[in-house]
Amino acid sequence: MGPPVPGAAAVPAGKRVQPGQLCASFGTQFCCGFFVILILGNFWFLAVLYLLWLYLDWETPCAGGRRSQWVRSWTVWKYFREYFPIHLIKTSDLNPNHNYLLGFHPHGVLVAGAFGNFCTGPSFKNLFPGLTPYLHIMPIWFGCPFFREYVMSAGMVSASKESVSYVLNKEGGGHASVIVIGGAEESLNAHPGSLTLNILKRKGFIKMALKHGAHLVPVFSFGENELFKQVANPKGSWLRNVQEKLQKIMGFALPLFHARGVFQYSFGLIPYRQPIHTVVGSPIPVKKNLNPTTEEIDDLHALYLQKLRQLFEEHKKNYGIPEHKSLIFE
Image (tube, rainbow, N blue to C red; front, side, top):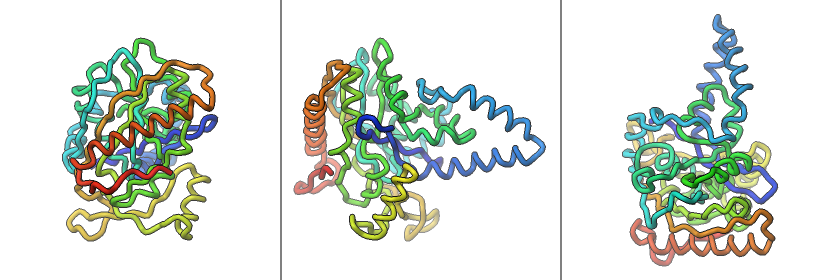
């Protein structure tokens, strides 16, 4: 089962959008190792040619990427989606004459729902005809030789402000930026049963929606936090402090997680087989405002939180969430 790449998080305006981490490391290690072999072996000239290509193609991840329907339709992704399984649930039509910014929650450890629904398979296209999704991920992944080609072919693009603007600025509508709002910090809360979202201080995505007139759509992925168990790291503990310091230095977090093995269920790094239901909410209309005030950003942010909570409350009973449990915004 091929490892997906985690999504991205919108951060306060003026900073770069920074995402999660994790399973991408397996792919990057393989690709970087292969690149080193080329350099040290008899095919060093291929590595030089690729570096030249990398230089010439450096802006592509910020300019809509280079998706491949062939890669997005690989049979392995079908097995990946069926393993959990992963489902996409539509609650409202999305008019393809508009552009959209989809806020994905929660980050979890794997971000399987975002990858499985927006980068592979026909579900999104069938449910929302005329819309093209772009999953924004950490810019650092596009600096990895060969791996960058894989993630772009799957429909992923950079999570930089320039990249989000490129998608939302496309004329004629029909384009959707998918941003994992909680990002790296939220992955440290990805314990089974956790409903804590890092969102109160994350308003950069709201400003982007206003500046481009992109309609906001809350998305909640039920089951995302149930795929792994994580070593206890409550806030204030020495482990959490170390993780948060490393996250600030590297830009991505290092959750200490475990799940099941290949032939046993007691320990391993393979995610548990837990159903994932990614529910796409109704759009929040947004009028274009090139210079939104702080008050306008705060008001739209508050409305987004209200709609996100409403989406969760309306669907939680369908996916095993007890009635007394609600989202916690931090």
